[in-house]
Image 1: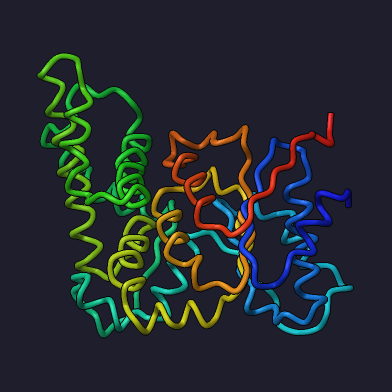
Image 2: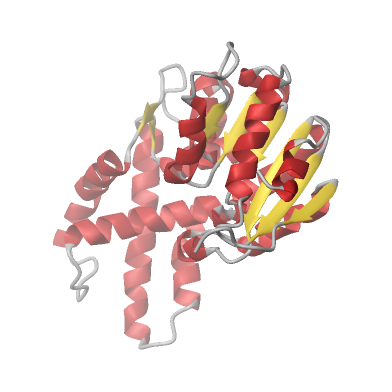
Amino acid sequence: LNAAQRSIVKKPANTSVFLEGPAGSGKTTAGIARLQHLLNAGVTGSSILILVPQRTLGAPYADALRNPGLPPGGLPSLLTVGGLAQRMVELFWPLAAEAAGFAYPNQPPIFLTMETAQYYMARLVQPMLEEGAFDGVTIERNRLFSQILDNLNKAAVVGFPYTEIGPRLKSAWSGEPTQLRIYEDAQACATRFREYCLAHNLLDFSLQLDVFRQYLWPNASCHTYLLETFQHLIYDNIEEDTPVAHDLLQDWLPHLRSALLIYDSEAGYRSFLGADPQSAYALKEHCQEHAAFARSLVS
């Protein structure tokens, strides 16, 4: 480690730090060293949350957690916000199921993968296609189904109601007015899918996030559980995460004992998937200390 990285690692255990810099400047290396420092200092592993926008970005931390030289005890949790939402929905299902409108709140939830969500979407949309929905759209059917799911996911990660998908798409269209009916069909499909999920206790990614954000995070029991369970946070690649994730962290930061937020100043490539570098950078104002790595250490 160089001097800049060591300064991050040695920060007191009650400090929140916003670290920024270009790719290859050693930010993630400092994050991993900070994790090891906390564990070696006696911090309970189960009280540490490592948050990343997608699982692949957590690979360096996963490798570090497989190090046999780590102190004995519980391991830190390596999650995405979606993974955290699913864990909380499964744990606190009775507190949210009825309020969220599920038909069978006394029965367990069924979590859908992208593949199973697309399967149910196809079952629901195919009859609409036979009746003339999306007439004139030439993309493959599987691509159409996944696009409707993507619209639902975008609504969830940005934080607006799924019922606004159609109106928002129509407001952005500047072509022939006859094309607007396609966006009405997209809204009808999204609504039919959401209603089917609520009627059968099915939760795709968008519904998991909506239930967590609207019903569990504001709930005192769930809120207290999270605050007491995770007292230390390492949040890497925050520029690739979504506005809902950043809003959650803005509320959470004042209650954490320590936090290290890592921002890549040259990234933000997943904006078309809902990432918001601007709301990520706004978290800097909620951290006690700011640090920057200016020099790339790789070719």
